[in-house]
Amino acid sequence: MTEPRQQQGSELSEAEAIERAKQGDAEAFRALYEKHKRRVYSLCLRMTANTAEAEDLAQEAFLQLYRKIATFRGESAFSTWLHRLSVNVVLMHLRKKSLPVVSLEETVQGTEEDSPKRDFGADDVALAGSIDRMQLQRAVESLPPGYRMIFVLHDIEGYEHNEIAKIAGCSIGNSKSQLHKARMKLRDLLKMNRAEKAGKSRAG
Amino acid sequence: MNCVELQQSLAEVEDGGSSEQKAHLRTCPACSALLKELNLIVAAASQLQEANEPSPRVWNSIEFALRQEGLIRPPRAGRSLVPSFSTRWGAARWLVPAAAMLLLALGIYLRREALPDQVEHQARVAVAVGNPPDLDDADLMQEVADNDPAMKTQYAENLRQVNESIRDAQGLVDESPNDEDARRSLMDAYQQKSMLFKMAMDRSLP
Image 1 (cartoon, helix red, strand yellow):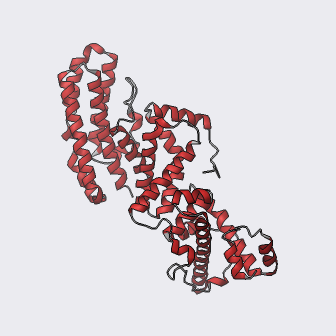
Image 2 (cartoon, one colour):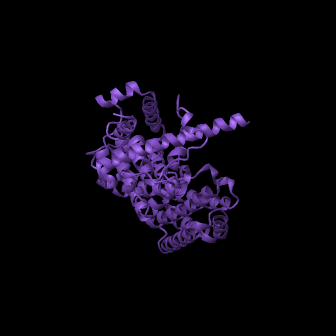
Image 3 (cartoon, chains in turn blue, cyan):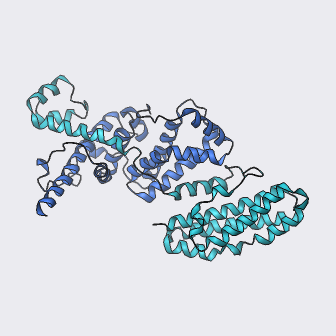
C-alpha cells in the first residue's frame, strides 16, 4: 500500500509500543490496538457488511499481528503491515464463504439484479452538496461483494489498482472496471435514497 | 466521443482529463454532472475509513487469547492488577463474589511480596479463598445462554480450560507454597477467569 491518507501519529510512541509488545507487555498490545482499532474494524465492516463478522475478523487480524510482531523489523510502516494483514484476513474469510471476491461477469456486463431500480424519478435528483456519511455507508453495504471490495480498497483505503490486482488476483483493467461500476451503482443508490426521501417529505 | 463512450472511458481515465473526454464534457451538461457526482462520492469515501468503533468484546477476546497463548507476560511482582478490571464489574450480581475473591487473593499476593516470612500461611489462605465454584459458573453459562446462545459451547470449553488451570495451579501452590511461579500461575488463572466473565457481560450489554 502506498500510504495514502496515512494517519499522522506519534511514530516514536508507536515504535516504543511495538518494542514493548515484542517483550509481551500487555499495555503495549492495548496501545497498538487502541491506535488502529477503528481503521481495522471499519475495513472489516465495510467489506463484510456484517457487524458480528467484522468483529471476529478484526479480532483475528490483531491476533495474527501480535503473533507475528516479533518478526516486524520496521522495513515498512507498521500500519501498512497491519492493514495488508487485515485485508488478507477478510479475503480469506470471503473465499471460505465462497463469496465472489471479484466477479469477471460483473466487469463485462452488469446483471439485471445489480441494476438499481429507477423508481421515484431518481434520475431527476442531483447529488449536489455533500454526501451524508450514514447514507454512503448504507449504500456501500448494498453493493455486491465484488464491487464493494474494490471500492473499499481503492476509494476508502487508498490502495492502487496494481495493488488491488495483486491482492484480489485479478487484472488491473478488471479492478478499474469494477471500481467504475461500483461508483456508478453507488450514485444510483444515493439518488434513489434522496428521491425516496423527497417523495416522503412531499407526501408528509 | 458520445455519452456512452465517455462513461466507458471513465473507468480508465477517472478524472475526465483526456482531451477527448474534455471535448465531450464541454458540450454535455449531463456527463459533466455525472462526473461531478462521481467525484463527490470519491471525496466522501474517505469519511468511512475510521468511521466505526468495535465493541469492547473485541479487545476482551484478544486479551483473553493473548493470555491463553502466553503472548502477554504475567505482571511483574508487586505490580497492581486492579487497573485491568473494568469499572463495570460491580454492575452484575454474579460479578460481586468474583471481584471480592480476586481482590482478596490480590491482597494476599501483594502482602506476600512485602513479607516473605509469612509465605506458608498466606498461601494456605489463598488456596482456601480460591475455590472455583465461588465464581458461580452456572450463572455465567446462564448469562451466555440467554444473551448469546451461539457462543455457549465456546464459553463452556473456555470455562472448563480455565477451571482446569486454576486446579493445576492450586495443586502446585499446595505442594510448594514458597514457589513464586506457582502463585503467579494461580493469579493468572484467576485473571483469565475474570476476563471470561467480563466478556460474557460485554456480550450481554445492549
